[in-house]
Image (cartoon, rainbow, N blue to C red; front, side, top):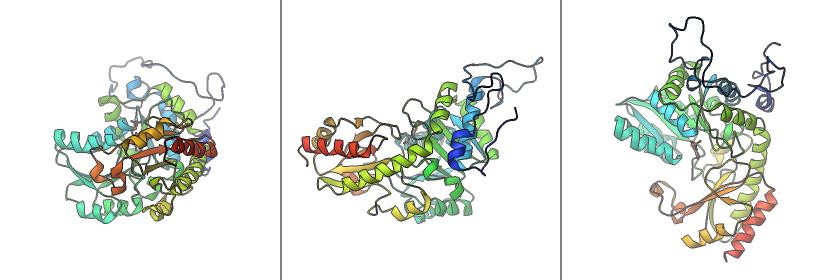
Length: 397
Ligand SMILES: Cc1ncc(COP(=O)(O)O)c(C=O)c1O
């Protein structure tokens, strides 16, 4: 049976279902199996093998079968040439930074990013490896231009940014990066490739935490870097063979299965989050809501121009109450769970208090403490009812 391929002549949903899967050659099963093996059989004379070959059938840390299937699907969905799938989103960020950056290089990165990206660049790479770093409010591309130095090698942005949902203009920043000979990487975790494809907007690399929307079921961790084949070769080798951030075959298989329904799930996340954000914004006890789908969001126009079908399921909001009032509200929720992570099937909320060390980098309305809220796939009416009854029980509505 010839390998079935699904190129870009097919739509996003068709590729989400089929790309990377094929008929199993041995059994004729319609699903490729999970290959749980650490090692692969060597040829007759293995003495001239390259033991550090990434991607061959040798040793699972160098790359395994399920990982390759997943990479095929993700490269296609992101509109990139190639992909490296890894053990976590942070594994992907580390793999990218370790392979690209050397002592003496300069990196510009968004002042609002997932905390681990901040720690990696601003604490580890900066202090340990003498990589120069500049934190920039990337909502204004001119700030990026002003921060350029002759040794700027990488601009790393997150849009929407975790946890404030700030929006950066990918097209404008890609132009600035390339005019300077620097790379642009975009953490696309909050949007997912269904809503936003940074490579099509000019980025060189996309980073995804597969743990979130792409898997979507809250049961497996993974990360990915998507980009050009020539740029990914060193990243693949270093992130797997040197850093050991290889994804397990089982997790790759689970994420492959989760990704099949990404378009359906994202449509629902987009629609429910929009409804919930509009409802929250109309409540007098709600101090602010940050959601790129709201006209009140400072990045709404840019988000409209780069996040095609919708704005994802994550928002931030704060209440007109004190520290304890925020926690009291959460204690009354019955459908929504207080837990970290986002992009799962179930709704998750986390209270980020007033003490976050990066508070000074966030807009002022965030300084009184706020929630990051990931709207799940439950009925939107039930999510809104849950918020309402918890606000009432907490004495806030
Ligand atoms: C935007 C973003 N990037 C990266 C990560 C890290 O992903 P992981 O938890 O899979 O390592 C996260 C995790 O929350 C995230 O929100």
